[in-house]
Length: 472
Image 1 (cartoon, rainbow, N blue to C red):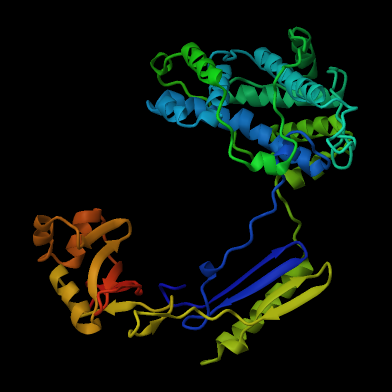
Image 2: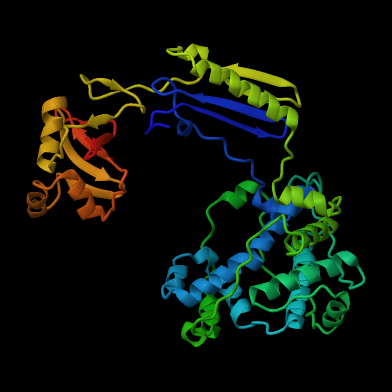
């Protein structure tokens, strides 16, 4: 919109909510001038240890999905393909050990059959829905009281119960089937949906008995969880080095890659929603939260907000009203209206668009807005020397830096030898030489960003430059 000086009628709906924003060249701020507020997030300690709503357990299971079937596979591929993966990991002490443990689990304990994936899924069930819950209760017994004497397990903190696995429970078996098939997909193994196969493989799994760990710290306060992570314990580096020693050398697995799973909510045969629904409902059972069906889980996990025809039609009508105003020349900014609606309340509000902020070039210079630019069109190409002189003579500005995209074409601190070579070059030659850009046949102009000093030798902010280099 800014580059081509075009109007924009931006609109959107979210269930019963809708909005219309009017962007008019030379009058209003641009679409990019404002930002939507960040989405409200769930505290980490609530997700990890103290959920009380089905939305919490669904988000937790979504995070598990990403960690187990996407991030783990991507880390393996990075380890096998990037020589500096381990050195870079050493600079991230907070995540080094957990990443290495996942690497070892994916490379050292690499499955070669679906049955081994089933055993892995059974162990994940035990870890997620029994051991972690038992550890939580060990740290915070059900009869524990806070420093003020109030019961610890009260209010939003629901006391959890560890689950005992049963292959005859459809939800338990559903988790195993989905997790095993996704694990098999990571390794290019053939999956299955035969319940008998999974029941037989589960019975053969050896599940270690849970033993509570001493000294495990669990965050109970969102503010505590947001603090900077504490330094890792002294023996963590030794443990990490021991894990590194067990990893196979990348050269021994040349060409080998895992297949990460990219979440896709609309395919009911890929086990993605099956896993998230099963994991979410199992965790809901841990905390006695009402479970959600497959459809409800897909809606929340996929962040699906149903479209409402009445909202769409109302927003369309508001857009058309603003379009009629745009078709009439020289309308003042007061004539346009941004609209905000929420039919669930109901609520309808209109506001005048925010005017484009005005800036001044130094203390004595002209005013400009984000819609302005310097248009340099001399009917011929300018050399770098002529370009600098153009701004000095026409605008009384000393150009101290010129950039095109990420490439710096000129700066006052550039090596004098290079400057001498560049001064006779045309601006288009300079762009091609430095940024290695290729011009499209229809491209007639270039965009430059410049830094300038005014007559008082003060650094001033100026608009960008649109420079025409052919097509006269």
